[in-house]
Length: 116
Image (cartoon, rainbow, N blue to C red; front, side, top):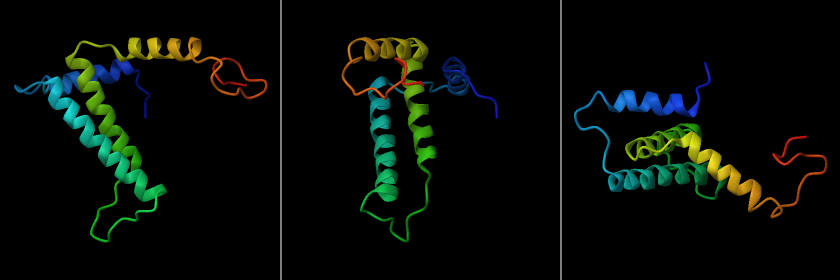
């Protein structure tokens, strides 16, 4: 499977959504969808790692599937607001590597990106 850049993923989602008259949901509706998808992810994490086992009647869903659903809605929200997630990622990484650079205990011998 070919790996895609965030820009390619945003373009894929836009091409998919653009084929429908309804287009993107409103930002408020997408926030509700994000909340819903995050809840589904939380439920799966709780089933796998928490103290709440699945009921026999519940279908098995994978954490990666739930993360994919969440990512799709994040991309939809970004696209609808004209936000480049590549640019947003660069800004947040700059923030973490400057503001929070001394916040955590570094692993000996690693560089500023946590690489050895």
